[in-house]
Length: 575
Image (cartoon, rainbow, N blue to C red):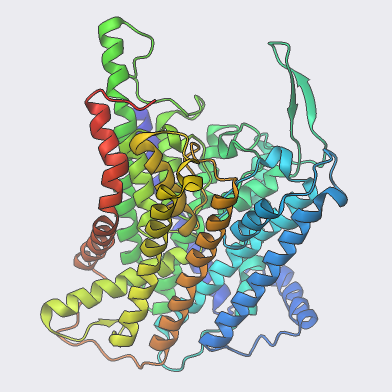
């Protein structure tokens, strides 16, 4: 257990060390300041604008920025759908994989276009190498770049002193891709390949196991997809076992690298925000609030998994059974990672909108599984997904200062700008979309036969599988409880709408909020101004995030993982 805690401590320290250098670099990139990559990347960037007819000096208002974002995402969604539907007739298909069905192709296209990477297909047998590269891996870059662009526009709106312009979507997205995602992904790919992650264009290998059974092992350009799925908080794996597969995540070192990649950009964006705000303490306050919740989450999950299933523990103590879990719950986990690295990975991936997994979340103890659900339900703001995480944190910061303003009877301010009725309506709209969609579709799935029959387990765990599915898709996470069969028409269809609604109905109100605040002039702080850089603000922000989440989702969680935990403690299981 001591070794497990040390692993968590080392990870948190490394995460803190990443924030400043990467955050400062991204501030230079998005303020169009010179970087060390300019001699190589700047000519490519200028050529891209020239070929696409983009005027990089022209900024956009909220309508132009939002429309560019939506139209572009629709175009890439249709492109992916066409590739997946025609993959059986296209080259680079050594395994002769047929065309994807219309329903699954729709769900997959929406999933990758919205940075969710919810997978209702088996990657090894249903996606060709061309589809992996041209549709899925490419979109991992694009959807992440779109999220970063939206976040930068939001940050500009909050920190500018006048005017309602948010920047240029095409420039922000291009610079996200060329200056941030691509260079890190190239280095990360080489690191993963050095550790044994597969990167080739071969067909599947047929081998004979020690039991004498012939097994087909998929090959492909998987190291390059692995790093961008983590770096871009996408999550869709090249293998059905995702990052638990030894060809995706073979060693403890690759496990550490992949976890750091998931949180690197979201953590750094808090520092970038401080640079834009002209006060680094503003960024560190957001960093501290998110880190507090991350540590709370991993502590609860680790303690629950280390304790294990009390039914099996008692059975082992009384009957000397090999079923004892005195060493903790290792069900669904890879021995090469153990409990600590598995739970840390689960915390990281549900705190962000990543969805990559290195263990079976359906095998988590009820409290650990419920905590993973709550991580997503909070809006995945614990650093959150690439781009949208910092937006969610800032929306909650605005809610926090509004509550503080009500307490002292003053108009609330954030970064010197007054938060009034219009801003609060937009902030509340950006928060409410999540619970209405996730809980609404969960309720529908629980009463419609096609929805509830997809849950393979009875009782409260079956409800947990449904809840996890709708929360994950609405939050653009993509991980799942494996007990939910989501490849049918019902789940593929409502899942697609959940993912689209969750992605764009959050981004659009946030851009409108940023535009509204960008048009306001900053006022100097007064003796009654609530400071947003100290520990009191951090505590208030953490409290707002947790209380809003607890009040909204507690009834649903009480019927699922909470009651399941009580029943398990009482010796009751559902088979």
